[in-house]
Image (cartoon, rainbow, N blue to C red; front, side, top):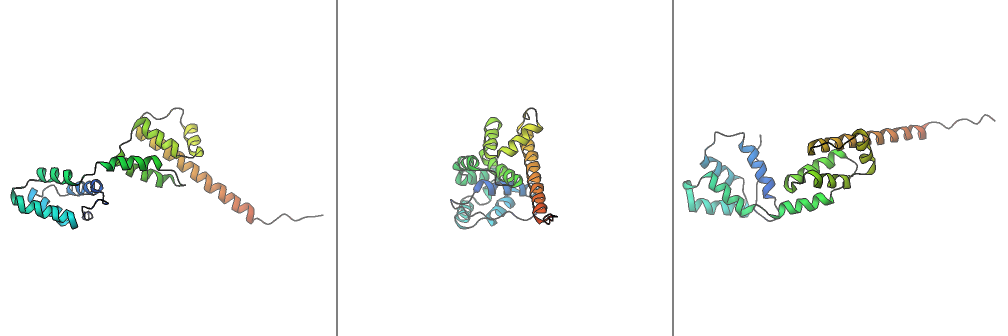
Length: 185
């Protein structure tokens, strides 16, 4: 597994997304001690984040613990607005012809927005064309009880609608390419 990307500490960079990558990577190396983890984190920082790290190291040195370091870096860089920004983007997200692309973007944004139940379902329903909603309603007498079931039902409906669209286009292409019938008058 490759190292996560670097973090520069600038306002335009997503700390939360970077920290998720850090957390996943650390699970592959549980035997590493706190000092090694803190030093490794420093190698993944640039610009203002690197300056923050070096300042902390100069102040605390080897007395720093990973628990304290994590609390400090999260307090310094975690963006409280990131969840609200994700919520706004989720509200604006619309299906653009690919259910896979829509669901991928939805889930990426919802990692921060944390929409669930009726709020999540409303966002999805408002983003979908009627053809996908019709397909989902026709395939399911009742909406699935849990969010994952709802997401899967919507995804499957989207796949079916997209397959049907491709089939219709292929049939139309075949019809237009077929030779015109001869006039036997």
